[in-house]
Amino acid sequence: MCTIFSKTLNLFFGIRSIFIGALVIWSMASSASAQTGVALPKNIDGTLRRLIEQQTQPKTGAATPDQTASYVATMLKRQTMTDRAGRVLVNIHLDGSASLDEVRAQVLATGATEMAATNEYRSGVIAAYVPIARLADLAGKRGVLSVTASARPIANVGRTTSGGVPVIHSDELNARGVKGDGITVGVLSDSYDVATLDLNGNPLHDHAARDVRTNDLPGIGNPLNPNPVLVLDEYRPGPDDPPATDEGRAMLQIVHDAAPHAKLAFASASNGEVTFAQNIRKLRTIGNCDVIVDDVVYLDEPYFSDGIVLRRSTQSFLATLFPAKNALTFRRLEISRVGVGCPLSTGFLTAPLAEAYPRKTETRAGAR
Image 1 (tube, rainbow, N blue to C red):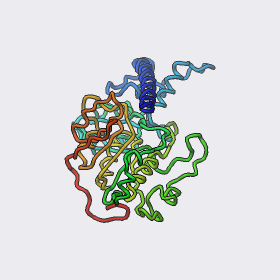
Image 2 (cartoon, helix red, strand yellow):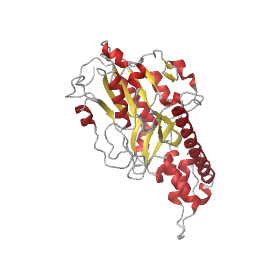
Image 3 (cartoon, rainbow, N blue to C red):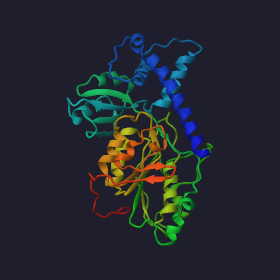
Image 4 (cartoon, helix red, strand yellow):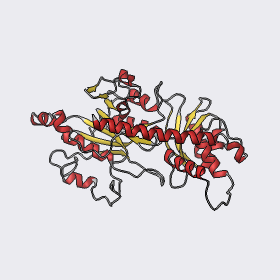
């Protein structure tokens, strides 16, 4: 209980800091047009307005940088995702007056790189890294309803050593022959095997190949389970993004301890919210996952309506999904009405979901 309270308290103060920073950015972004002399479209959110202002405002040449401007710049780095070319990850929401392909062509013409797209959420949405200087132009294109910054993900666990096996008595089930045979479990987290530093900043020597050799993960050479982990999408952090921690691999190790014969699959949930939603489908339709678990929260997920991640989960599978967002007690818990697993202190409430996309029947290495 103390651990849960501590994590909830830390998360509260983290959210409060982000909220205060957002208020500062919003208040300063409201004057962006006046300071830059550029009439920005109204369908660009406040965070992107401030980014545009930073890039276009004249340099003052002052020896000491303005403290407020420096604070806002720091907060923008924390709240946005950028690639090595300095492009920002945005969600382009469509208004239905143009097709997804038409809008996609306009997006790519700005020098953007598409990350994910779907026409199954409202009128459609495209996630792409777009040059900041082209955001205003893109927002005015036909078919574009709004352009918003893609929020950073928040992992829902910390430096924790699991004692789950004796708690849930999976070792007793294993002894009776129940070891996860015929089941595929998918994990969504930040990364699987791309971290280079440990949590103390030292070089990381523990990688997936070593975990297979020590039987902590399935794969060739593991006598309990020779099926390699199917990796569908890895984390691709930009220069200002949090480094990879391979938390997904740690989650898979926990699953392997509890169900040593289960097949495992992984996809990143940290490449933006639209990509997160797409990877839910990939885990079901390509990874053939029966159970999917994530430990990631996006603070811009809607409270009073179905966001793109929840919409994808209800569309895609008969699998059981355990999302991290339900661990936040102030989030809307009626998510359980669609049969998504709702982790509570007393256990799990689960129910089947309607299957919209059937599992693949062809055989291939590493998945059934």
